[in-house]
View 1 (cartoon, one colour):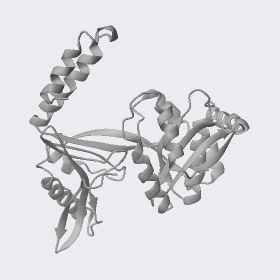
View 2 (cartoon, helix red, strand yellow):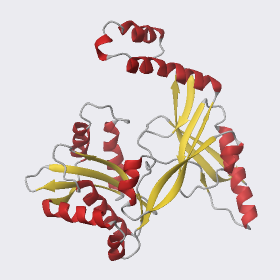
View 3 (cartoon, one colour):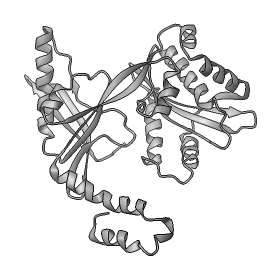
View 4 (tube, helix red, strand yellow):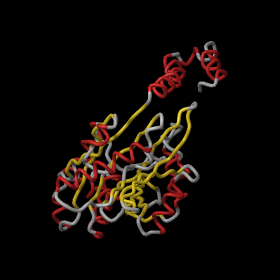
Length: 312
């Protein structure tokens, strides 16, 4: 996702790597930043399982993670989201990081498919049934079709990531047989919604989705999510609904599929220099949002002054 920008720090014990942390390094206004690549959902230390008593294992893991964090202490800003399996945030707190809960839903799809269907909310099952009457689910092997559909559905809005990155992500996942794009299509060939799923050896991730608001059936996305549950079931995996449930509408949609809340953790550390620079960089955007549309022409010097000074 970020060719030429990857960095890695490692912790060794007895000449053997027992932990490492990979990340993207970039610069912003003179500040150095350690972060996740675009569209990457999770990133954090990878620690070799330690042996011995519980107390010894916890101490060893704490020591390894602390050593990794010391190696990135020189960055002005560090930001990552830890996997749900990484629950010990004590080393981050001790190293001055701010830790925030980032909840997601997890659904154990190893259960019988009938149990999974019964676990859905009644209204959600009905919506899926109605969607099945009008739509069929197809695999999409041409990632450019998905990217074009995603771009069109933005309707002029700015994407929070570079959509062109979806192509290499799909190619890499598909080559490893760990990714699939599915679409809900009507009898006229109109695509109502598409979902991009990726998976590893534990979790089946609801990675990206998009829908055409002008034609999308009410149950199009729900139908595709159920397809994801079936795919996760066939692989004996746990479906991760990919967070974002701090939004109430998204929470109500996700909870209807029968998953349980699991916590990821967002970890952030910033130097005073970065916080000041970051705040200054946001000023032009904040000013432009406050200026009425009819006044942009008369007030364009506000933004142009910042551009000339190199702030934007």
